[in-house]
Length: 156
Image 1: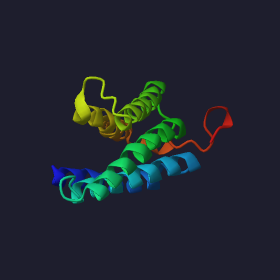
Image 2 (image 1 turned 90 degrees about the horizontal axis):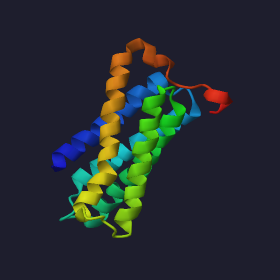
Image 3 (image 1 turned 135 degrees about the vertical axis):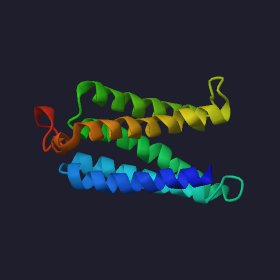
């Protein structure tokens, strides 16, 4: 499990850096991808410092990932020129995870238990990375136009 967290974190950092080089033309895209990079570093911490051996570092890594990564999803949903359904998916994924985080930190597990609620916080981010990664792969060279220099109605 720890090795899988480290692998996920490394791929998040590497993917964010590579995508930033292609799509990071706007401040929003750069901020969202920076958030994904920071989130990836948090995931690496989660794997490098297991909860049963170094709980403070594990919790710090998880907290960074839960907050920064899910906010990053919302920023990227706003900053990238994604199709409307994918943009909506970005907003809903980030919002669901942040709402679940509020439940998690307030010990309201909604019948899922602590571990189940923790998954509701973490998994939307991983699923979002897979979905958007597949979209970028399918879009190919057209994906280079996904960064909004100034999005709809001139927002950045």
